[in-house]
Length: 258
Image (tube, rainbow, N blue to C red; front, top):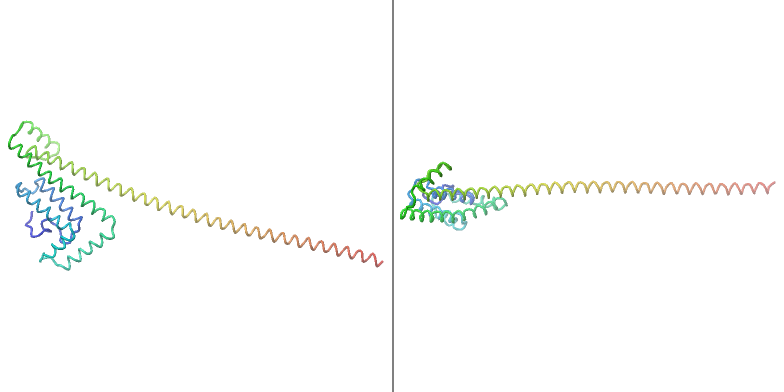
């Protein structure tokens, strides 16, 4: 690892990294140190892990991070504040980002507890093996099978078991991540189906209302025509009656004149 001068260098991140980036860096470095990928002696690796954990605890806490940033003389305060402000604004208006941040924080806490347990188990296993090595032939067979299965050459059985436990935890974390992604996709599909169904129902209701209005208008027009026809028929009947009366009156008048 490179020579570190502050917590950002220790986690190998930029000074304006957000919580998700800080957590991801912490997880990556913790796994490397736990697996011995950095080729550091056990004691130095454990010390480096403690430093990485402390750096994450400081930078993952907004108030502690602000206090720490204030003590740094080689980081531009205005530029750092601007990046922090932009990150806070983005997190404020992004529900998905807030959800991912919470999930990442929970994963980091869980990984921290697991890594501490891994180191404890590793030290205990190393002490037991050093004090009383049991069945070296069986351990050799186990390590050979482990190498053939996973392509990783472990120094001893305890290290192999530690690597197996770490791989299982990674697989479980990946399964959980896939499950969360599938759940989010399903929720998004349900939301789209709900919106599409709402639009379809709204269009049907609107079309039905327009059809009802057209039918009501036709019914009013038909009623108006019926009333008008009735009135015209009544007027025609009245004219015919008057003409009959006039003709009858004229007929009687002519008879009297004769």
